Image (tube, rainbow, N blue to C red; front, side):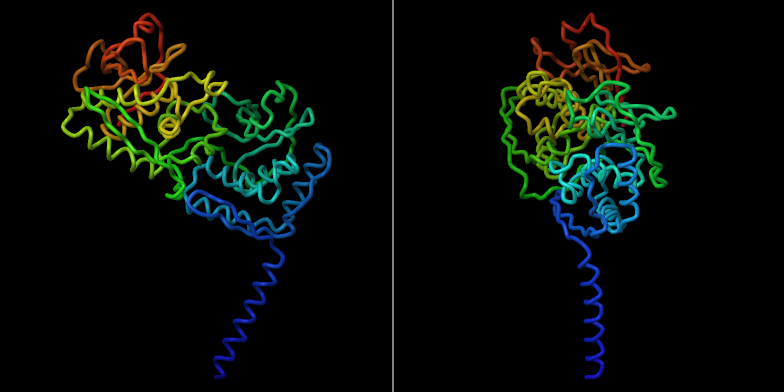
Length: 397
């Protein structure tokens, strides 16, 4: 009985300590892919920012955040990043969702942006803030070839803009925004837009999409699983280099609903016939529409977005075709970029049709986008025969 009493007293003691600690913290919950990200933020981390945008007000806000008990939030973010193996872009999406709980974007945009910047810096990323024209601009160091978002350079290092989409046409040209000079010791790492692994989503959040495709007078039916959250992930994703773009994978549920079915359909076909099947599947299963008409701007869709979208263009289909050939046949490929078009060529044991030579090896054109002609493997569209192209990506298994 004595031992029971001692253990009871100890339990009450530790519960009291835990209660006192939690009493100083606000509990939040964020929907995050296959579950929820639950975190606690100390009340000292809840700091107001109502001043006008200036170097002094931002430095004061940073100093107050740095003096707060921010470490628990950072530790919980880091643990989630490791648990889900989040690449940089997906980790940034987690920080966006987290900050939205602490400092909602609509209530105070500057405060929301500063919290994101602070947590990215404290997570080790070399992020910067610039101000001008009554706007706050959030940059991050990136060493990749990003083509469609503003950037500036400091000491030959490129910083791309993470919140350009929030301003759109209101974003000003050069010499408008001046960086705020704040040194964060932890902020040393460059940020990457590469997505080499998609997160796990809740199976119940997927919906089934019916696809129909005819090949050699036989109809093929597919029931693929798609998830709207994928569109949210890529909502503000920039135009990355072609290597990064082509290698964006499918999520697990979408993969399992498509790839095994395709492999079953391809049984008994040699590589040539199998690639021809995949080329025509990509060409004719989806409706074509250019990005200007579809989105009002240039927008590259990931393979999973192409599968879930009603319309797609040449960039989208080339990326999907590349992914399918890579995943099923592991054949070498090259991407051929023309002034207004992109297509793919595949290396077989023997070239088919008019070969394309690159680094001494022969490739056969495989057009995955609808054309006026019914193009076979090894045949280039007549409209492209006299146009110059460049090889923007070469894949070797």
